[in-house]
Image 1: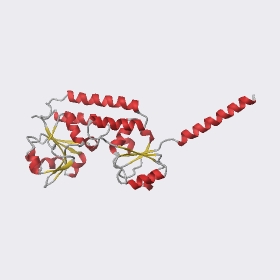
Image 2: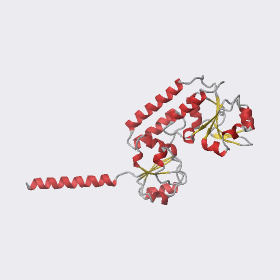
Image 3: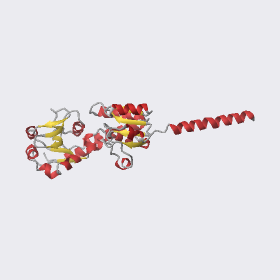
Image 4: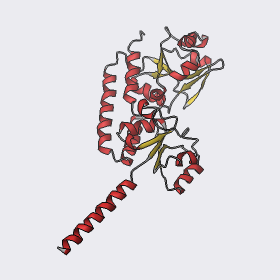
Length: 285
């Protein structure tokens, strides 16, 4: 009987210790980086997130309820630590470095995720790296399988031949030239997956193309992030821009796109391809 009481007491002690350890190791994650946060939520790990940076906007409803910690490249240790995080997950380039060091010294785990270029393979690697960290690898495999299948469906539904539609993504349109998305950008990957010919392939990254260069491109389709269209005076103002008019083969086929879809390697890459192909299907060459 005495021995039984000892066993019961030990069992109760062990259970209490385990419960306390579990309680003390609940993750309080701050996620910094729009595409990164999208993927975290897509992998069903959003329940661990207690705050995000201002570039993290999707999923809209969930993130609107969370505190914001500034921009991921301009973080403040004081602001972050006030939220009592256990972990900061961020896109590579987050900082400043001194802030990240302060977080580590305060006992916060800091995990930076690197994006290895712009390709489907790079996207899958990013998703899997995040999934491993959050212990969602099986979930991620099914998630990526569904996304790749959706992209294939959009490609099969194209009504135009590969690279027959000349497209460009504009980040600005001024008197001296236009800011375009060239190689090694998310828009270029989306154009490739959508079968569109990026007229800015001679440019690396986001750079200015001369008005003369744009005019010579014979553009069929213009893509612009919604915030750029708004700051430029709206669709009518863009389509009435003399340089834009001269660069077009025919009609002003301007597709206004969600900036997170157009520019970020997030969780909705399949939706971005679907939107572009569906719009391009309506263009009369």
